[in-house]
Image (tube, rainbow, N blue to C red):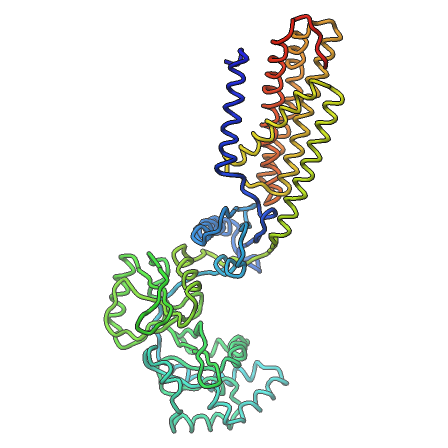
Length: 541
């Protein structure tokens, strides 16, 4: 088939038809730098570098799959999630518009736990020890300020209420007046330096306190002081609520007293879907546990009827309903008046699963669509100028042979773009540079062939023999140069990221396309030309 002109023409037409078909039906995917979007590089959150390298590599591999599942469900067109080296994951989201939402989905740990809510008495009983520990750890200037704050009796009453009962009674219990016993306790606390107690006091509820939102950061700082954790009650875990509560003109945040160990985690989660609770008109995420998780949930709820269970996501309590009856494998996470989009994102990350180790963003880049359009326009201008210059030089130096080579270059462009479409490869701005570079390499192959053919003609060979010898003797040099370029492109793709990989892909595919057009297509054009002329008729080289 290769030996006849008709067979060679059929092969060329078939290749061009496949390339054009793929180009017209699939099109070429534009990269981040050509259509705009977001680029993120993430690494394991290990600031002290204490994690074993083998464990870190294993976590990176597992988190890579989790990220891919999240982004696939997020619905970004043509995303790229790749592992770079042993410790980094690179995410490219072309065409993304809501970058903050995408970051939230990517960064979220999504570690889900179910914990029992414990009574608040252990915390209340330890408040004096905690106050002393806080005062001992505070710098002198802050200690004096804490004493002044504690002396304001009215501030204690306003800062915190404790409440009990089910979540459904949240608004009613939060607004209840403090009892006489609580007032006596507040007065006693006001007489002493009590930086912790002035923000957190027992009021007779079930393991939940309200703290003024303005004081949340202060309370967290007190709890993080040296020595304070040592005097906290054993067997309890303090967790903040995810949402604030409005009470009059003030905002409060709940602080829950929870069991330290979870009886179920997100590993037992089988499905999660966003929805709206018609009874309370609030946004919810309904979940379903697997069989093993359902059995545990049924057992725990049957043993704790009348008590509360907290649903903890990423160390924040999203809801803590009271158990009215035994519950099986289904339940829901209450999100209040949060938008449905937030519920969908939460359901998405829960279905994809939690990261095996926290990830943090070490590099972020955003490319606007206008900048991408400029890159396309500049790339097209550069490509057109490059092609015109190559054609002009080839025709000016080699006349008819240069024109045939230029015809081959048209086929090269179609085949290269078609290969990008077939493979689903992404065209980037550096990829356009690779396209132009491989175009020059295609011309370089033609120059080698033409010069060897001229040498054969000068040696007295006939035109047909000179053409055959020119292609034959130039072949080894063409193969060597193309092979080394392909190897370089493969290395760049392996070790590079983003734009470098785009350049490597286009360069490698361009070399393959240019080899086909320079060696096969151009020679076929020569054979057609020679077949129409007498054997002894001279040919312009």
